[in-house]
Length: 82
Image (cartoon, rainbow, N blue to C red; front, side):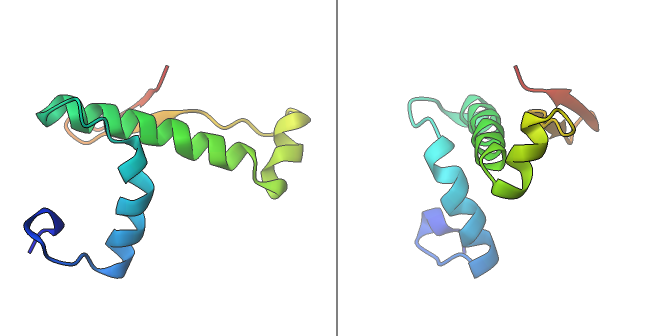
C-alpha cells in the first residue's frame, strides 16, 4: 500500500521520503512536480555535503568538487543540474 493511500512506508523508504518531501513543489502536478522535486533534491543534497566537516576542507582547498547531477533512467545519461 502506498503512503498516499494511508499505508506506512518501510523505514528505509520513509527516511528517503522525509528528505525529499521538502523539495516537492505542490504547485506543480505530474511529471513537472517529479522533475522539479528531483532537481531541488539534488541541490539540497549538494548543499548538505558541502557543509560536512570531512568534505568542507577538501572543497575549500580545491582537491574535491561536488557537482549537481542527476541520472535520467529513460536515457541512461547523467546530466548536470544548473
